[in-house]
Image (cartoon, rainbow, N blue to C red; front, side, top):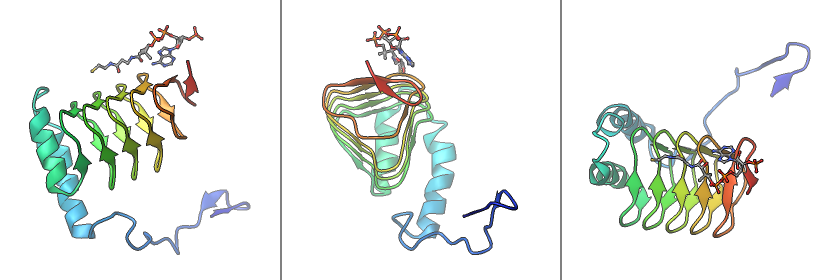
Length: 145
Ligand SMILES: CC(C)(COP(=O)(O)OP(=O)(O)OC[C@H]1O[C@@H](n2cnc3c(N)ncnc32)[C@H](O)[C@@H]1OP(=O)(O)O)[C@@H](O)C(=O)NCCC(=O)NCCS
């Protein structure tokens, strides 16, 4: 909560809500180390390796999914078959991505957003709400084109 007089956040009572990370904090920290090393630094064409690492920590990743270099897939995301996540894209927690959708380079999909099937998200977009099947969306804040 922002104190209007002080104009900064009072973090003295801050706690991460129970179950927020989806797994215990130890598992999450192990994943964090793997994500920054084995995952992020794996060669560009190691799509299967990156799928394997994420699935090993419980992520739901479909068949033929391309997870490009240095993408970030946060907790409890679900990625359907034949999705392409381009380099540097970030899926915040609880994001669902439908089949054959493309998430452009360095874009950010905010927490809880549902991306339909056959969606194209342009590079650098910030997606803050659900995207219906077959749509193309670009920009920050994102808009349909
Ligand atoms: C969205 C994209 C697919 C282009 O789609 P398109 O239908 O050919 O779109 P156009 O180039 O005709 O542009 C249409 C409008 O969207 C805008 N636009 C296109 N891409 C945009 C982007 N990434 N961010 C912001 N605006 C964008 C254009 O400026 C244009 O705006 P206007 O109508 O106001 O002039 C492409 O621009 C893109 O972002 N591709 C992703 C590239 C990428 O991430 N590659 C990684 C490969 S691994």
